[in-house]
Image (cartoon, rainbow, N blue to C red; front, side):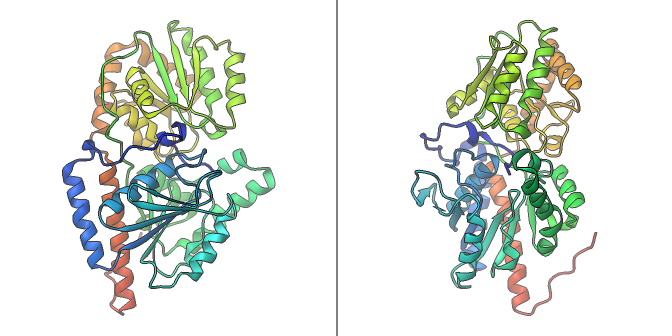
Length: 426
């Protein structure tokens, strides 16, 4: 039950994340967000709880946790009283203050779901204005117990990931819960996802209505910018958790094949995870240990430099809501070669900011093309920079808060007996 990944998963957890309020977010977006926060307070939307499976400090934290952190930080900066509740972090305190919001980490990895429901039932209507549930594979089933304005962040459908993560009997239960049991409960809940392609997949696979699902792309931290120092030899970079859904052995196979055409090729794989032995075995099987570096975790400064040095970013993931590493690299002027899946289909503008592929052979061919063709690489570099230009975390927080405020106002109208505006059906 791993969500799509941002840079958080490979960072050294001993180092605190820098403030998310960076110049690239734009003064205008932060000003609009502050004004929106004032309107939320006027509407009685002040105390907001985000409910997530894992905290940012969890060793397995990824894109979902980074997204929650950035949104919560910006909402808190806009004046909201924000609390994030998650499962416990081994060896960490139960309560931490981070970037203006409070994180409460208690209960076990799976006990967090019934614990959240029990605590939700006990919360009085006067104690909480809105609940944002982050549906990361296993839902919290908040429509059954939450008595306030509700919103769901659903980055992507997990589908095959259940079988990659859990034993077969439990995987079948998880998939049945996601595909058949939970969706009817959420038919009256507004859902926010990261990309148009993910929305189409959520609608087709979970049976939710198109107008029920809003699209708000993730942002890019301001530290990801172009810079000098491109590698003198062809360098392919991949960033992500070493877990089955990322399919790093597939990438190693494609890299080994590409090296037959690009003998100087080198690669760096950044990340950690329980599938590391499988990745190491793939590297050994292809005799690639002297030119593929399995970096493990790295700090933020090193990650920026790697994005800037790489000639191309590669992603072979099977499931993503977006693929934050793609647009992080794009902001550094590095195009991507990625699998043609929901999420990637929006993060990459095929032929403009990168190339999308369907098979290992296509992946190999695309890598060779980008590495050998300087003009193609330069054209994709310009397209990547343009693709990333409008993405900021302040913008993401602003748009998600707009959706939450709209839902809150509709709920207040219903409670007052005022008919809601008519909506066009699908």
